[in-house]
Length: 420
Image (cartoon, rainbow, N blue to C red; front, side, top):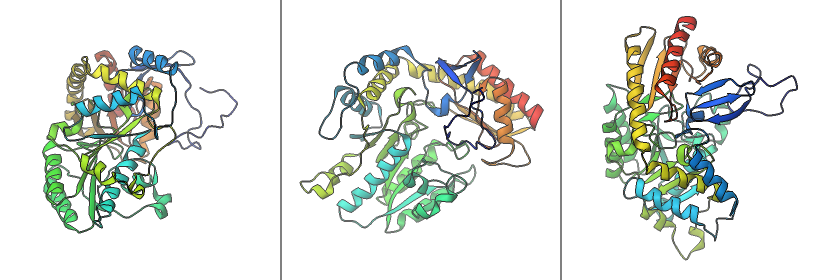
């Protein structure tokens, strides 16, 4: 732990009045972190869902080193470079067919902000007054103002409500209630002001790892198409193999009008994000009239070093990474299965390489009192698990071993013994 002198750092999603001692990490390798006192910690959540092939993967590290010696930064307005061009070209080969343009940014939140601005810019530039965004209950799309606006309202953003714009919300397609969701989406799409529907495909991440089938995703896309409403797929978390396929939309044979990718884009090594779109959205901004320019950027747009890391990551996906995803999914299913008969848990579920289960407790939800107790218990077992209240989920890097997973699930069972 950090010694006596207090750090001036304000950490994310951390209530320092309750948790003011941070674990100092000095090294990462594969599926593990190592602390200053040389404890090995299994990274069971891919360090907030970003690490895919493992920490400090040699191929990605070499790419970063080589690029840093050649070109480390260049303004991307009016300029380009090979790492960005290569990443864009390769992404369009891997992404659902029909996506034709790539806009770079630097985080999942900004990739979604870009998507929202693309959608509204499209309708504005073609002269159609559509401004309403449709969202799904319990969704989470980021922490910037636009992304908070299209996410679930509650503890995450209560203090910032004066900044948020109004949206139309449809219910989550809980098992047995899917038709209610589809009917609500249809009704929302019929309104004259409906501009776009944004959704996390197959799994709602921070909203509790809630899962729904590809058939529902496919029908939601059909409804949007029928009413000429743009379909935005936020695959910031669900992309890069997490759901069992490279992108979740593949399982529903869906091509979104706009897609957001980040987190695993660089294998979890550096911040980078992209927003992909169909040609008609780009074309609506293409004009000799400079007022129709897409006005969005950040200083580090398409940073060459980050793009080099992404290029190396994409090379790994061309050489067997998908097979490793299938292996992890199989191990996850085998190890989560016994919990379906464990009366201490409910809603035991898996999609691809992600598992989740809810510990029965006197309170539930993100601020459930059991959450910090679970996190502290797992820390004592040298596991990085960060429950969403009473919801425990496992989302490991793909280099995780079966022995690692056995250790993780044994700790989950033990936590129920001690804390439930």
